[in-house]
Length: 117
Image (cartoon, rainbow, N blue to C red; front, side, top):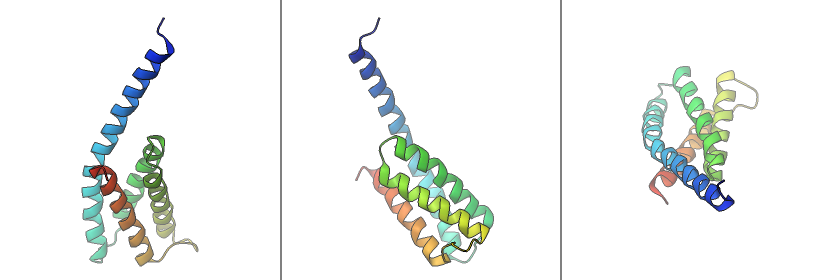
């Protein structure tokens, strides 16, 4: 039977591996979301592009918080909610400029986590 410390060590190793893969995945997501932001800023706002941003933000939100990146998870959750409200044209939906500022903040945080800052 494995002792508690052996189990804890294996669990810690597994968590660090998942965390590393998550951080590694941010580069591709950051690049894709950055391209979408350039399109949106050029006035090429499409529901499909925003839906993609919300979906990525949702994925980042769940994993980031689980893996100890609380601020990234919080920003991703804010973007997900804001994009969904914007697409639904809800009363509480942010203005376009506010939405873009929120997405920019998420991209900045993704870049910081990815670069290890």
